[in-house]
Image (cartoon, rainbow, N blue to C red; front, side, top):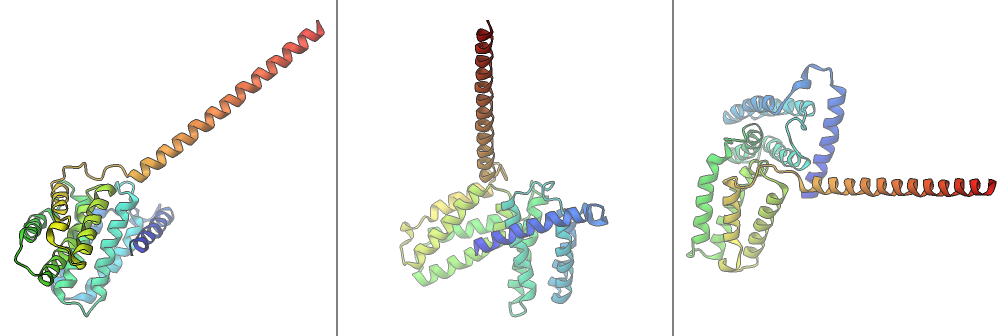
Amino acid sequence: MRLTVMGGAIIWLLFCFVGQEANADAANHDQSLKTVYTAYQDVIELAERERWAEAKDVLDSIERMLPAIDYEEEELTVQDIHVLLEAYEAAAASLASAQQAPENRMQGLLKFQLALDAVINENHPLFQRLAGPFQERLEGFVQSSSMNKEEAQAQFNELKNEFEVIRPALYLQHSETVRSRIDSLWVAVDRGMREGKEFHELPLQELVDELDQAFSNEEERRSIDPTLIGIMIFVSTVLVVSLSYAGWKKYKAERRRAKMSKSEDSYRQ
């Protein structure tokens, strides 16, 4: 699933690049995520009144706006676009699924709303209002010792679903390194619970601590992508080696020519 979404993000990036080139002189070239967020409020308002078909029409129009956005100007990395696309797909799926309960459909829509807000309102994002209550429930779950395994699994699934709504927004304010650490801890806890392990055998406190640090924004938000750093180092190394080798060959050739010239002068004398 993760590879599928990443592949979708790459295809979307290519589509966005082509769209930007094709619409360079078009009226909608100056679209930004702020304009998308403003338009998306209509989707939320229509959904709250359960006018799902109209909300879907508005979301379809927003989808057509996305290729005109300058994502480089928005300071989004490839991983950021992947996260944003995942949140958008959750919103689209919520509107397409008439079988879901209205509250579940609204959760999918809220996921994209919070993700957009996290990009355009980095200093005071909306998801922080949900972070406190979520953290309290997670800490209460970690400290609980009276539940049987079935109750614990059910409550953990609820917490995981709750986190899933705010996860894209949180991740858009942090590096891929932080995202990977949090993902791996959720997976480790989930797998351990399904295997019937006791609470003290699970990395629950590590998960709580990692999320506390992420929600408190102690790490610099959206720091440079480690993948990009690796590429830059590789390219720089190749350039240095290539230039050094070319310089050395030129030096050797000049020395050879100088020796030949000297030999010819000696011969003539």
